[in-house]
Length: 356
Image 1: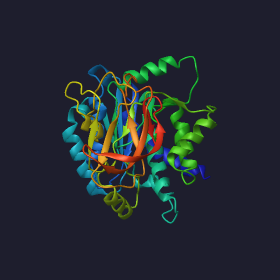
Image 2: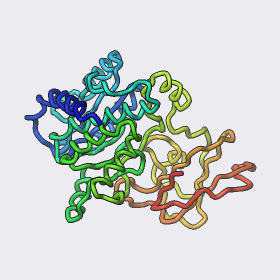
Image 3: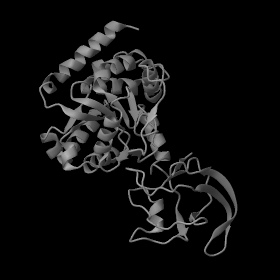
Image 4: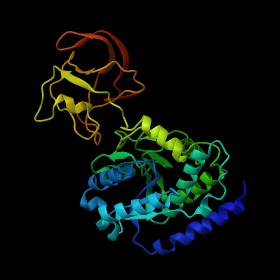
């Protein structure tokens, strides 16, 4: 690899960091990179979730660092304007920083290289983590399409304290891609170097996993219950035409087909069964669940399902999750209220969750 390219690249990064060197250092930096994918709301809703999920005290201990990594200057100007309007108080308080890498950073990306989508993503994140090096003690990597568990900072602090006597390189607060990965800031320069050296070799999540093993943490450390979940299933693309085609096919993110929800379980308070099937933070609440109880979704039309995800209990502390349960796919609906005449076993709940 050409180390001269890395040295030049670091000089560019440090030039843009000069004005942040003297700012107040926080305990945690929450970092994410975002590009134009036709839906700016995904970034805004993620930022809203980050700040609303943290208490006033927690917000004093973290900085949110957003790398606006698209070369489309119109998108960049409009996004900065919207964020500045929506999050002016956080920006003025130094809790939110926006950065944009100059074109020099991407001079080594070969446009003809077939893996350029993930190579661009790797360089985006190399710039992000390099910039974050001196902002805090720890760095949390998330994506621009997620929602966060309430008081996630407190739970991360607690886990770090719990791991004090056990050396670690990477703690994982999600099992999806590179979402929810926690690093020591002291390791970020090495991580940035690593991403730049091998940006053409693998997608980001696989490079991070490889980095962990090279840093002598052989096995992943998953911190349950997970604190971060995707709002959508969008892939990340850097060819705008390809991105728009993909997004048209996946315009609503997780595509819960229209259907009706039935249950024989008691409705508690005002949290109704249909809320278990919505794609927001609302939920169905019940109590005294017994063997044989069910919650059934009857689709309006038959559908081919590519993925089924079930979450039960609190995503923060794991309380109230179902200890045992299973998910089945039904066929040949009939009757009123409707049911299915045959079922295929899909999987058991593990710690109240299933995703396959």
